[in-house]
Image 1 (cartoon, rainbow, N blue to C red):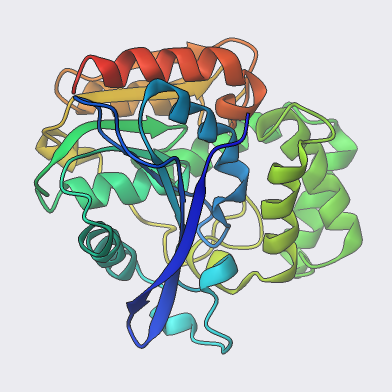
Image 2 (image 1 turned 30 degrees about the vertical axis):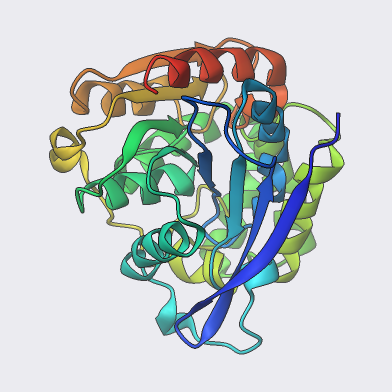
Length: 297
């Protein structure tokens, strides 16, 4: 089903943040859903299965974070890409679009960003959904290393060889990395076109991702490598849903850490998913998400 779509840009830091609104307005008593994409440095495209939430009587709002996709700045400025910048951008988008009361969903890095945003005690967040996100990159890397040990030995050997040699841009490293991604990032192979668009963008435009994360999901050498907010999770004061997949690179250990840390949070594990439950089990995901946000309007 197709819904009305509005696109536009919002001035931010001398550049612009591009947004996409699906749906026209809320039904009485319903609130819009604002979605924060992952990466860091990806685009909103891979979240587009969440358009289906429009059927529950609300708009779904996405934006490409500054430096990403349609919000690219056209020059190299690695020093710009900080957590603080992206926290500020959430408020800028909300103000510009008049989003006084919202449901907030963050996936992967987007969930990390949502946690950081909630630490600022923003007004008007009726519910929070954290989809496949860690509260600690230290724990993330520990868990990724456990998953890597389950890869075929020759694949893991290739990964290690290139990481040690600093040749992570090689085609051989990319092929070995794909083996991990097919198991733990998206188990729908090939992924739907809207997911492929985000991957293709990241492959060609890696500055934000490489600056903050590193060359791959499990070789984290960027500015986020010591990021850890486990001790701050009790500060989050919105009703919270944690979602993750059984085969997720955000492993059940990671999801349980987030659930335990946020007062009253609930966690739903998707048995047939990895890192993109909203893609891999789209129908069930929309049902779980829809049920949760309806309880908090």
